[in-house]
Image (tube, rainbow, N blue to C red; front, top):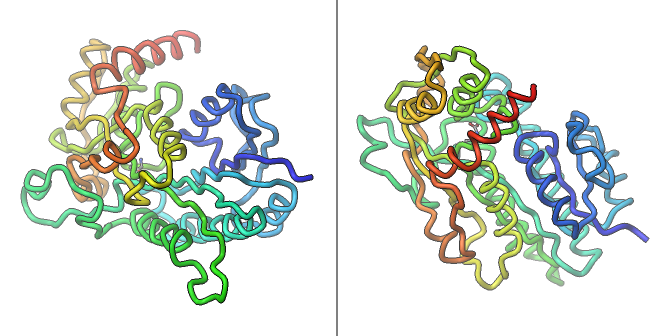
Length: 340
Ligand code: AKB
């Protein structure tokens, strides 16, 4: 008998780390994880099995599908926006081929079980590409899901296309077959920049905010790579995990879309810097603008309209900016570096 599991890819990454902790605490699922790296040691004992391996390894994936009955997939593995620009071909392989391979597995397992496998996919604000006119971010503040879907990065293109693949596997897969197969239950949230107290991101373009905060907490100087007026929305990591879980748990009939914007607060780099300095008055935070990364941030909206998520599945962030700093980021980050 195959064991029923929830399968998490990219489990050693930032969101994976937080999601595994949460799901393990909840205790209602067997968790199987996969990543190129071993799991961080603080996740020891929390999962049934961790597989160190490559998502593109078809033999390994075949072994996983033979061994487990997958009820839900949280597909978190991805090369983020800055990394992907250095290796666009690899990014395409990991971000697109990797996702397609998992959608195939989800489709196959849905047939086998006679019940849809849930496929939870974190997409990104990177799917947007604001027009290159002065003040465009000021003109179009809270962008809705279907607006400005003209990404300027490989990562954004990959995420947008995978959203479409997810829709296809949910609604139109094998549409000409005599018998309709059981569809995959694909659901996706478009994340803004994420900030964790416990982990530091790697390879993203929204990384300046968490990098600034962690550097200040460690007593290290930091030069922010975007201009002071750069503004995008952010979210504290516990809210990111909550968004994934709330969407996964939402009754199917309540969903009017498969892809939802979520956001918690929108801040400029300078506002973020001021808040960090308020918490760590000795912090040395300057600016050393990288024009190329700046262009990426300029192409992302200043904020997102998340009203569909609020209406359909009761999305509401727990942490606005002040609560995020006071109740989650600062206490945990202070303790983290005091213990180090
Ligand atoms: C990145 O900066 O690439 C990510 C994202 C916004 O999806 N953090």
